[in-house]
Length: 181
View 1 (cartoon, helix red, strand yellow):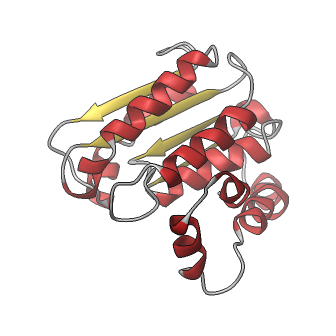
View 2 (tube, helix red, strand yellow):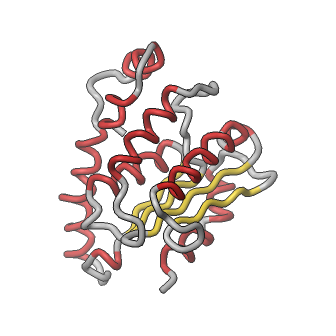
């Protein structure tokens, strides 16, 4: 989440930026989704062409960019799913990166009751790092006035890992949550 970088301090921010070959491009990416992909899909496929029919979802860094997309275009999407959200931003535990992302989200998430947001993680491989970060995000959501199970949901999948197969096996869970009426 490009705009979250300003909330991250210290050496880890510099390390993150040094691993990006050029400038951060998250804003270009979310603009591309909103201004090119959505119009193309809606012009060429029989889909619901309003906010109620649009959701964004991803896993790992894709979970972060999905949340970011929702913060940048809340009028366009009615919800987001972030599976195995890669809160630490690196392959090691740290407080700076996830703390900065939470600060950004705290200031930029849409109002409680206006959207649905889904989070989850497993307990194996890289997902084994995520529980403490997700607990802090869940607490933040409650502090902001979101209601667990109503306008946000957070799940743990014991024994599952950080892989496309694990996400595919449970993708019906966020889809059912986001699409419920």
